[in-house]
Image 1 (cartoon, rainbow, N blue to C red):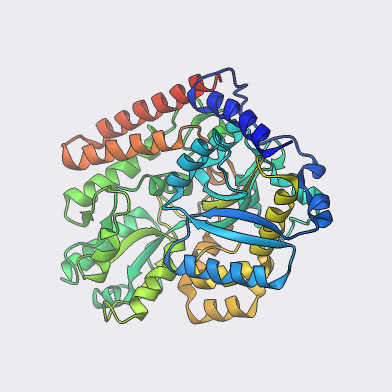
Image 2 (spheres, rainbow, N blue to C red):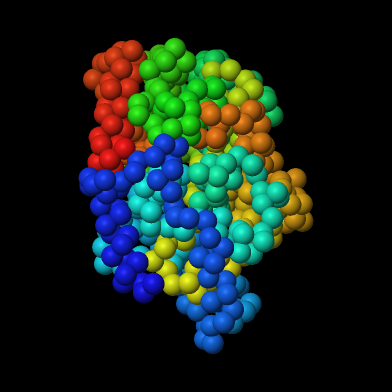
Length: 467
C-alpha cells in the first residue's frame, strides 16, 4: 500500500483513538498494533532492494545518551550498505507523541520512533504501528535472552508490540560523602520510606545538609512507589486484564505514600522542588549541599556522572540504591523508551527499521548504552560484555537499576499499567500533589482529588475511543 494510503487510513483510526469515533476499545490494550504477520515486516523487500534504504528515526535522547546514539548510528551506517539511518532529535517523549499523532494526517511520520512507556495504550488504539512481533517471527529471533518484565510491558494481545530499548527505573541517588559525615553507611542506603525518614533526620541533626532529601513533584515516581509497594495504579489488573476504567490511587497504601511525602516536607526533612517539567532542582540540591538524597531515573546517571567528572561540585560522590517503598521485597516495572515501527513505512523501510532495532538491541550495543547512559540492559547476555562487566565493577551505582528490575515478583503491579490518557492521569497526580504542598490540602484530600481527576481522564479517553 502506498505511504499516502496508509497515512489516510491511519489518520481515520487515530481520530477514533483521540477524538471520538467507533474504535473497538477492547480491554487490556487490545486496540492492537495490527495483525501479527511475518510478511508485514518487509525483510524480503529489504533484501530485494537494489539501492540503499534510508529511514528516519525520531528519538528523545539527550546529552551523554545522544552522543552515544550518534556514534552508534554512524557505526551502523558505516558497517553495511543496505540501510542508512537519519536521526531526528525531538525535545522529549511528549513532544514525540504529539508530533507523531499530528503527522498521521499528513504522512509526516518517521520509519522508526522512540516512545515512552506511557504511550503504549494510545499507540495501540491508533492502530498506526505494526507489532514488532511480526519482525521477530520474520527473522526467527529468539527473545529468551531478553528481560521478561521488559518484554511483558510492551506486549499486548499475546504479541510484542514494540522493542524495549532505553529501559530505566527510578532509584535512590545520594551523596556518599554526606552519608559518611552524618554517620550513615553509604554501602547500606535506606530501603524503605521509613528508613529514608530516619536517614534524613540523621543528616539534618548532624548539620550535613539543610534537608535529608529533595523531592520533585514527579508523577512517574509515584507510579513506581505504588508498584514497589505491591499496588496497582489503575483497575482491571493495571489495565492488563481489561481496559482500565478507573484509577487505583486512593487506597490504604496510597495514603501511606502520600502522607509520608507530605510529612517529610512539613517536618523540614525534605525540600519540595516543585513540579515544573524539566526541573532538576532536586539534583542541584544534592550538588549544592542542600540535601543528600533524591529519587531519579537511572537513565540520568550517565549525564550526572559526566557533570561531576567535569570538575563541578567537587566533593560530591553519587551513590545509588533501589527505590525505597513502604516495605522491602517489591519489584518495579520498566520505564522509559521502546522502539515502534509505524505502519506508514513502506515494506522495505520496515525491514530496514528492524535491522536497526536488531543492532540497537544487540548485547554489544545494550552494554555500551548501559555504560554511557546508565540505562538497564534489556538482555542478560549484555551483562557479560567486558565493557559492562568492567563498568559495574568500577562503579556499582550503574548496576542498581538492573538488579532492581530483576527483583521482586512479576505480577500486575510490576508488569506496569496500560492507560489511555496516561498524561491526564499524571497531570491529576501532579496537580493534587502541588495542592497538598502549597494550598494546605491534607494527604487524604489531595489523594481523593487525584483519584477523582485521574479517573475522569481515563473515562473521558475511553468515551472518545468508543470503549
